[in-house]
Length: 210
Image 1 (tube, rainbow, N blue to C red):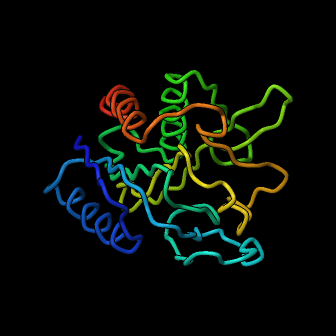
Image 2 (cartoon, rainbow, N blue to C red; image 1 turned 135 degrees about the vertical axis):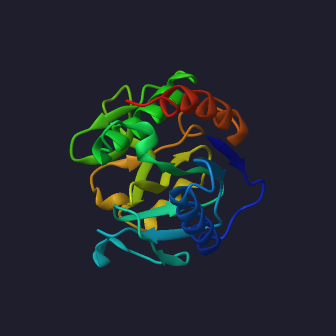
């Protein structure tokens, strides 16, 4: 499994073009599986289930995305992990639901390295933190696409973005809950800090067949 880090923000269309080519190369056996860590400039993406009414105010450019899910925000301070991965290398029988569960587990394990207890919620995509008052806020989103059993798109984790940027959309179509970040939770870490634990945990979870 390869690991790629982009030090400068990557335009969304550029990232999608890279992923499309890498997925084709992986399927052909010409390239290895890859996790790509990066940030995007301010933008919104609309997944395949996005509802027009969930775009409240287009503060930033909006891109149609082939990934699953609805609207989400990407921008500075949010770490993106795009996984281009042949699911036949991970599972004896390729299973998209099990793959999503594995990505959730990757985030949960990595959050726990910083003392945060990430949780799943039935019917709500992403990883959630529960405040002492019982308020549930999302800290990470997951949206993937799978072509011929090779995955792409992936995970976004809020390190220190401007959370007001989410106000232009209904994030992932989920109302009644908010978003949070490491910074909002009182933790000062860098994207590099989180990259290190994600890489460590990915090597544990993604490199042996299930």
